[in-house]
Length: 201
Image (cartoon, helix red, strand yellow):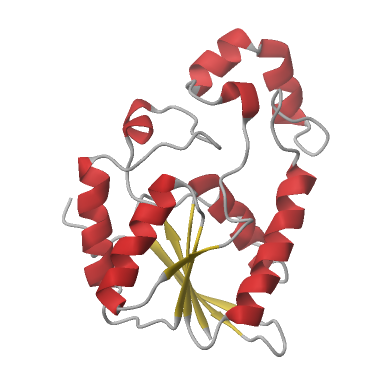
């Protein structure tokens, strides 16, 4: 089966460089246009299921694709963005200024240190494992997974665990990353990463 990992469209906080995390920010006008472009870009990638984070920015993006493919977008627990707690709504520059010691500890040791009221790496990794297993169990053929930027990196890390990627995983808004996945053997092949050819701007 093919898994299409999709990052949600643009939000005002993306433009401002603010950390969104679990703050439920909707798409802006450009993000809604991106979602329509994405739906057109997925036209030659028919899927049987579209799984999505229930957060507004991801759900709006998923619904545009689902409407074009005449299926329902299915929110599934576990695809939500990483919780950054007290850092949400701030830029990384502001985080470094307001939480210098915690930020330094988190940067050097993210396994054991979380943002105040945020998630630990191990918590994120655990829900990645759980949600991928749920998706694979429920999917009937190719499936789309609509989620968030930081969460995409963890999902990719989990899926590609036997073939770790050396470069940092950064994907753009409304991009498509395509993985060939074998439910039987759990073998994966990365076919395309961060495809934005469908976007008009």
